Amino acid sequence: MKISVVITTFNRPEFLIEALEGIKNQYCSPHEVIIIDDNSSVSYKSAMPIVDSTAAKYYRQNISCGANKARNLGVEYATGDIVAFLDDDDVWLPEYLKTLQEVYRSGTEAVVTGFKQLGKEDVIVVNKDILVSKPSLLRGNTYCGMSGFSAKRQLLLKNTFDESLNNGQDWDMYVRLFQQDIAFVNIPKPLFLYRFQNEDGIGAKVRKMKPADIDKRLGSAYKHKDFLGDYWFNKRVSDQILFSLKHKNKKLSWVFKSLKVAGFKATIVFFYNAVKRKVLNKPMSI
Image 1 (spheres, one colour):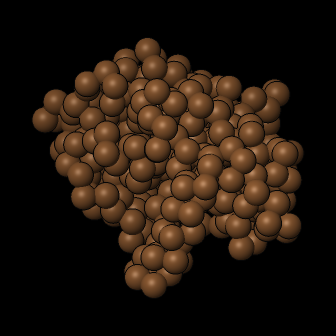
Image 2 (tube, rainbow, N blue to C red):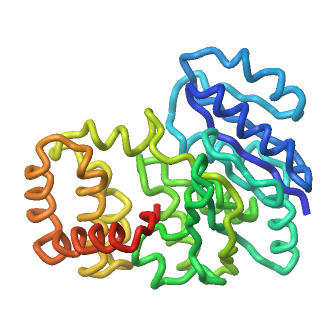
């Protein structure tokens, strides 16, 4: 069982070094490591020693095409049976690849896992499902981001990442695979470290947006509107619009946007859940 690792990176050589150190510390070595640099504008010279020591294949795009295109290229370049994805700002725990090998030997076709928050390892996000389920997918991405996702390469060649989406590509992929009734397993353990609130991450970008610009972030919800149904569609849209609300300017305009697009019920549910998480001191799932 050969596992190819595909890492996408953009302007974050220092984070890439941490990610590669995590790979070097694995109990089980990967078949290969493929790095797709999406035309970074900063030098990666500092990362080259560890790129070389891990025998990673480093590909730099001539034009920036986005993370989904980079992932699709990584799948094309891979030669392993399984492709495991890793974002440059996350770190796998040492048992990650060993656990994947054990699970895939049972006939599994795709896998997601739980995670810990990098720097606050006591914060653990784990879905208790054994198999990826519709109830969990209806609630959004309650599993993990790309650093906890892997799948058989042949499956990924037939189900490429949607390059028209600028967010929600993980959830979109999970929904599409689930609908094909494949053996899609969730490992209810934290197997990697997820970095929250990067300066150039999703949260930071959303905080700078204007309500009129949010529509482009709703693509995955509209794509799977029939799968979601009215209630969960409106809830997902409201969650996207009001995400990171406390850090945004003109908060009322965001609330009005949610009311207009998602409706009163979904907007109220968002605030109810936010208060509930605060009272219970539970992290928000991604």
